[in-house]
Amino acid sequence: MGYNKELWKQVIELGKKNEKGIINQLNRDDVSTIIATMEFFGSTVVWMQQTIFDLTTPKFKVYDWLGMCIMSRNNDERKFNNVALKVLINAYLKAEGNIKKFVENLRVEDYDINREWERIKIDIEE
Image (cartoon, rainbow, N blue to C red; front, top):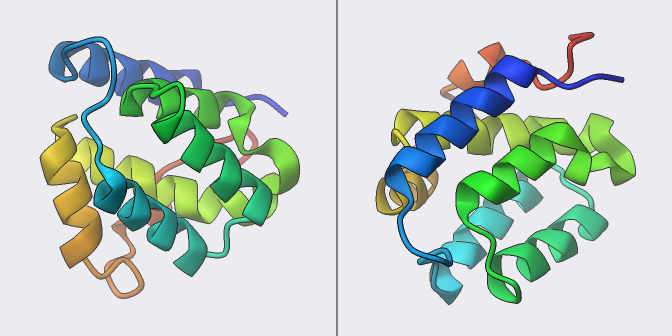
């Protein structure tokens, strides 16, 4: 299964433009917000654990992490994980790569009602 290279490129270019520094600027509450979103939308424990590792231990920038997920980082059970990934990507794009706005968006936007994330295509077969 192939991934949406245009979406990957959009996320990476936006991130390189907006995420400065060597590591991400997420704190524990920010990562908890990301994980809570993933959990709400049915992500697997494996992907959530990998995300905690990716965003806290080696501290990938958010765009690096999202780019890896678009490519296949959430492949342990992609059919379950893609809904959360679409929500996360939608929030990231809506925040134009601004991490504070991205996390704030996840905290205040009700993506169970606002389903604009459904337009996001992760896999080329969608």
